[in-house]
Image 1 (cartoon, rainbow, N blue to C red):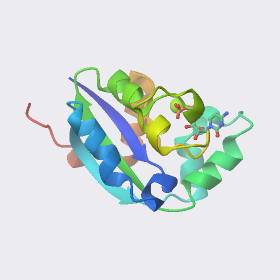
Image 2 (image 1 turned 120 degrees about the vertical axis):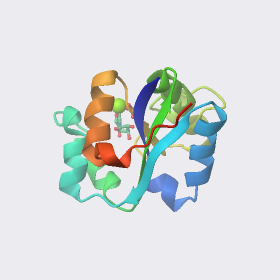
Image 3 (image 1 turned 45 degrees about the vertical axis):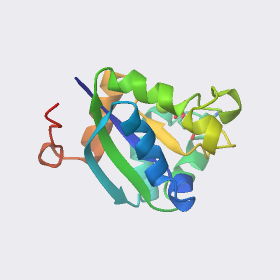
Length: 141
Ligand code: CDP
Ligand code: MG
């Protein structure tokens, strides 16, 4: 059993895609262990994406991530990290495989609807960034 952090980004919330995104995870055997809607400040978005601080897209990305509410969730299941990455599709929607969230619902490399942790280390950092241990429930499965 593994845990990962996923986010419905501001574009996904704006387009009323929260249920669609969560539903795709649940249909693929992942369970929601924690979930909430929040709005990040620019500094909070910068802290979340600190690994990208040297990248040319850092400023624009953190502006985008703080422009409106997001839904953050902890997902639990076997191989949850890679499973979520597979359901999301490639970063660039134009390169994402058919049937993935990004291929189906996004059209822009930055505004690509969804986030998912990319490793056990990043999952640990990202889950702890948004949730205390008391807010995460064992699915009991
Ligand atoms: O989200 P993912 O792990 O697939 O990609 P990333 O390389 O960790 O980049 C984080 C986020 O930065 C992406 O999801 C995009 O929103 C944005 N990004 C961008 O705007 N332009 C790029 N060339 C690469 C990423
Ligand atoms: Mg990433």
